[in-house]
Length: 482
Image (tube, rainbow, N blue to C red; front, side):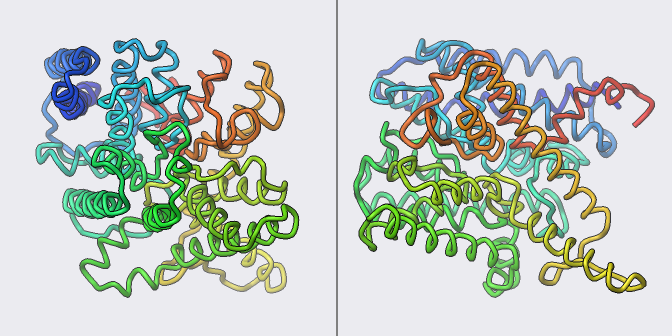
């Protein structure tokens, strides 16, 4: 492993991350608000970037898998620390709470420790939503798309940052792919922003919520989240954009090249839509039959929250913590499954559950026909035994880590169901959990140790565990081995 190359790439990532702070800084200047919260991290990122650049070296060859993994993991950690500074320097949050808010924004979790957003400056609210947008598509994807001198072998970094097993690249060159993904992301955000304006939101509220929606993050400018507006039309528009943001963004790039039929033929997206529809119907029946709710209001609420939780956005339009237990059970399942691989959504991803189901079916067939040759496919894509092995390992690791985080939080004083809800919610990048940390609550009441655990859980969930685990293994950093 070439440490100097890692220094060089981190230098560029920090410089780009510092440059992004110019947007909230300009907004703060326009509103005559505080500028130090954004100016201080900008200057620090510039200083660190220069320091690392001097220690770095030119990238003359492709990155190795270890170098790509190290750069991606360290970039997320470094940017998370950098973006905690605006909250801390402004005096809004303590250092630990600032880190929780920063990681929650970048990972698209949307869990907040702010107890009252009405006291937060508009520039800081804009910054919160901007972190969603930057982290939603991926820090590395932004870096590769916008900076032509990102270096050779950046495919290694994008592979370690991408979510879910994806079968193919939309375009042959990795930089073209990154730029195409960024273009789709920007277009969706623009259309979403205009739609919210038409629904009556102010320009700043519309932009903040557009960032949060397309990044499936969930930060709002209102304490009550989307429930503040009491607008059925707005809720349906938001639900639509949450759903399309839960699809693999690669299929939109392919649709641009090969036609819209690509989207309708995507097995994973079809399955995801079916999951949302089934969850909506079952929760509606439960609310009507068990909760005594009227049909149309129940249908509206359940559809919105099925879209919100399955996309792992975490917007709230009603207090689902008061719903019947069956509804909350279904919401927990949606938290576990999440959106599609290659989307901005979190969770385990629909494609993994499809492959797990098909693998079990193949195993049953193999038991009846021991000499048969089994192949697992989803739509037009066939998956190798290596991919299936990785899916099984990921499933086991995900569950074990979620229970580990829950165990530590219970040791720290949280109730069993509260700890379990927070653990799975943060691993799945959802945000709202149940009970003390449910739909209408924040994470401000978490004890100190639990907040540290939540930071780890959000990072492990966003980078899908393996990328982050590798850098904690001593042999990973040795020149030999691996």
